Length: 485
Image (cartoon, rainbow, N blue to C red; front, side, top):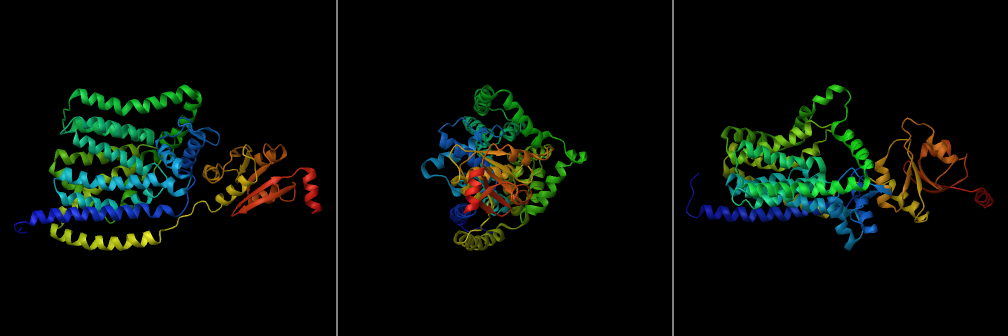
């Protein structure tokens, strides 16, 4: 390709314009959808209700759920939500907003890091486009979960690490973002200092020792201090709770037992299935970077390797745990595209695709997709709150299964604590609870209501929604009045 005088300046100007267009479109596609839908129970509603308790109680160190300490996860994400709830009130969109804003931050930082690592401004814009059109990433940027905020802190730490090559003071920023990541996702946050240690060895970096030690202290002291105060306050309860959580998510047994050794293959299969249309370009970029042995670009391979290995060795096999590696995927995809195709073709294609993206984004902004997760629990939670006193407990039973998702949603959309009846290995818990009730109001599944309550025990139905029934036990005199009416 022959460049005329002024071509470079023209292309730089074009890249800047494209960057800002993509930045605006990314902001719309990330922020518009969060105004619709509600919160899923297992993670979204759990973090939101913890933040709700922080606001109501005014105690930022008391991380609670259902009246007891919630010791499984560190508090930063719930603190981010609480900071928004205080001035604007409780709402589903505000619960999702920290993830959406962090998602936008990821897209913007990918553009900078892609340009910095390749020395090619257009590569940064192209990586930005790949990141902004990675559907799996966009999905979780619209959820009130820690995955995308953790990805943002991870990426910010990597950007600071790269900048520390020129100015070692950036090691302090890298440590600060690593600390924020650990206060967001606990154990997975250790992947950042592990990555930096591996990069130091692989690329033989020799940063000034005083800044390196200071960066390590900045990274480790805040999470250590947080966990130390938890251990001081809760003692054995903290270790029991964390042991149960770690056994469930990290090192617990798998059935069949051979699945303990298949994590690496399962994550590859999940990526092959989901990372389209960018997978071929990402593979090509990976091959090119490995062949070139460029120390600057080698960090991308180490980055993916560290996240991949830590995900593969744990018990839980969920693709969203790989999201911290998606920025590296995007940059490798940009490198692969520029290797496989002439740049002028990619530029022309990107202009067309950006126009198409603009149309899609505007359609999403006008009519965002609606994902409903609490169609049954939300009306039940509202009705149960209205039917009980502020200090009154409610009993929850749903086929005896441990339904933490429903419990979280009932607390987020309502305003009461619950006595959950999980009867795993202990059949008959509902019958016992009805004979010696600790609460007057119950929420049970419709099958259990028909079998154990309906015509057997005097009751007043407060609300029905889907498979759930909320009812109040009646005293004999109340039952007599009800029959007379």
